Length: 358
Image (cartoon, rainbow, N blue to C red):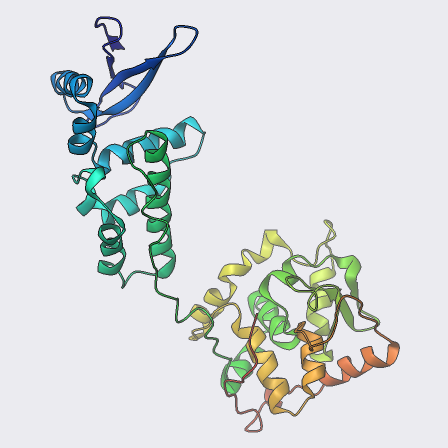
C-alpha cells in the first residue's frame, strides 16, 4: 500500500505478497503525460520506510547524484526479478544460484561498474561448468537490459563478457571392445538394447526419439530419418541383422506411432549415464555415434558409405538424395560387417578417429 505524499513528490510502497529483506519500494515522479498522468520511476528497495523516504527526497533534489551513488547492482537485480514476474516468467533456482556468484557486485553502484568488473566474476569462477558460466552471463545481460529501461546505465556492459570454450564439448570416447561385449551379455536390459541400436546405426541421440514407425521398413532392413543437416535429413539408416530383433521389439505393442516409447524408456539424455552407472562405464550420449564411425573406419568400410549412413556431407549437393535398391543393399551389407557379441575381438581396437561427430 502506498504512503501518501504531496502530488508529484513520489510514493513509497510496501511489498506484501512475498518476504523481502528490503520490502519498501520508492517510486519517483519524473514527468507527466499529455493527459496529465504521472510518469513514474522505481528508484529502489529499502529495509525501512524511513530509508525509502530519505532516498526519495534525495532523488527529487539531485537525481543524477542519487543514481550514481545509490542504484546498486542489487537494485537492478530487484528490477530484473520484478520484470520477470511482470512477464509471467518463473523465477527458478538458477536465479538464486547466479546471485550467489554475483554477490561481490551486489553492493556496488551500478554507475561505477564496467565490463572488466563483470568479467572478474566470470574469471574468478572459471572452474565452473561452461553452462553455469553462460547462465551467469545471461542473468547479467538481462539485468543490464532492464537497467537500460530504467535509464540507470548508458549501455549493456555484460554483452562483451568472454567465456572460455568448453574443451570437453566435442571430445567423444568410443566404447571399447570389452564394453560392447559386456553390453551384448545383457540384452534383456532395454537400456542396453537402445544403446546397441545407437552403436550399430550411428544415429544421433535425438534421431531415434523422433523416428515414426511408418519410417521403419523391417522387411527391407532400413529406416528413414535424420535431423540437423541437409545430408542428415531423410537419409536411409540401415538396420544390421544383429539389432533387428531389438527394433522389432520396440515396434511391438506401440500405439502412438513412434519407435521410442517414452513411457518405458525414460529420457534419452540420461541413457548413457544409466548404462554407464549400471555396468561400470563412463560415456556421453554421442559416444555411441562415434563408436559406430570408429568401428566402420577400422574395418575399412569406405568413407563415402560411412558418411552416407551417419549423414555427414560428402562435399556435394545433398538436397536431392536418390537411393537405389543397390545402394541400400550396399549400406546394409556394410553394417552387417560390424562384429557383435563374442565375435568382437582384437580386430576391433578402438581408436579416436578423425571423423567429426555432429
